[in-house]
Structure formats: C-alpha cells, structure tokens
Image 1 (cartoon, rainbow, N blue to C red):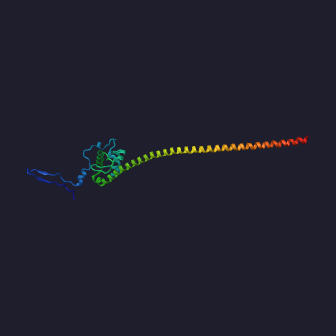
Image 2 (cartoon, rainbow, N blue to C red):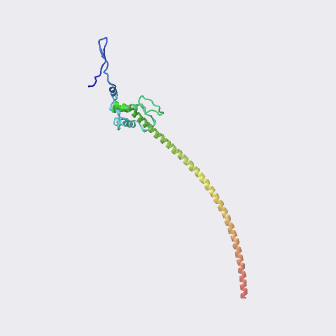
Image 3 (cartoon, rainbow, N blue to C red):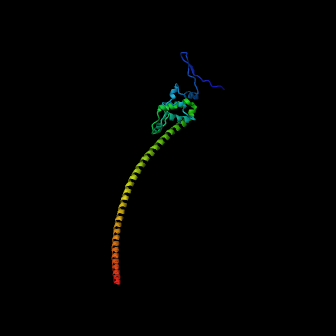
Length: 224
C-alpha cells in the first residue's frame, strides 16, 4: 500500500466560498517538524568562546548533552546550580542554570537529533545532566570540608605544639631544679668526704711522723 494522503476538511459557506482546513498530518510528522529550531543562523550555535556547539563530541545523545553542559557553563556554575529544563520546576535548593543557555542547550539537541531519538532519551538526558551538577556540587562541598578540616587541624597542631612547648619547658625547669638539688647535695657530701679524708690523712701523717721520730731516736742511740 502507498503512503496515505493527508485529508482536508472543506465546507461551503453562505457566500458560496469554499474554505478548507490545512491538511492534517500524523502526530509523528508534527513532532518531527517541530524538532528543529526555525530560522536560526549558524552563529546561534556558537558559544561566547567561539565553540561550535553542534560539533561538540558525543558518542550518543546523552553523552553529547553532557558535553554541551561543559561547553555552555563554567565548572563553578555547574557546582553552584541545578539542571532544570525549560518550563520545568525543581525542588533543589540550588538556583537553576541560566534559562537562556538551557534554551540554547535544548535547541542544539533538537538541531542535531531527531524528535523520536530525543523522545526516547529525554529522561536519560535529564537524569544524567542533573547528576552531573550534583556530582560537581559534592566535589565542591568535599573540597570545602577538607579545606576547613585542614585549617582546623593546623590550629589543633599549633595548640598542641604550643602547649607541648610549655609543658616541656616546665618539665625541663623541674629537672633543672632536681639536678641542682642533687648536685648541691653531692657537693656537700663530696666536701664532707674530702674533709674527713683530710682529717684521716693528717692523723696518718702525724702518726707516721711519730713512728719515724721514734725509729730515728733508736737508730741514733745504737750508733752512739
């Protein structure tokens, strides 16, 4: 069977004029006709950095959509914002990405892919782009936590080292006192020992002198 011929609804008015409605087409044909932006110059698809958005690499429609986000938005914008398609709402606490560039995002998809392909992947595109923004935000949040954690750790280490220095100083001071006391007592003991040794040595020398004197006297007498 051949292709069906579009039908027209016509009626004769009171003025004998035949008026007809435009030929009806299938829903698929209507969707296909609306799949590409109308009257858009090639410059429309070039971003402010001179990148032709229709030439962004992508192995499939979802991969291409993710590449478009990187071409249309900065890393910081993706971190701080949420992906919200045109005409849709979000429960995210983060503000939506620039609606003007989201419109350009959608026009690029319509220009590059058929309506049937977009319809088949629309939910996968939304989920992947939403997740991309979430992942960027999580990395940013983690970086903030680690950054704050590093600052806090630095403060803790400074406090510990500072207190440790004070404690070490106190310990060394106490050790110094104890050593001074030990050396002081040791000096006294050493003085006492030397004093007693001197007395003993004096007594020995005196006794030796007496013995030597007595011996000398006896020797002298024997020679006389």
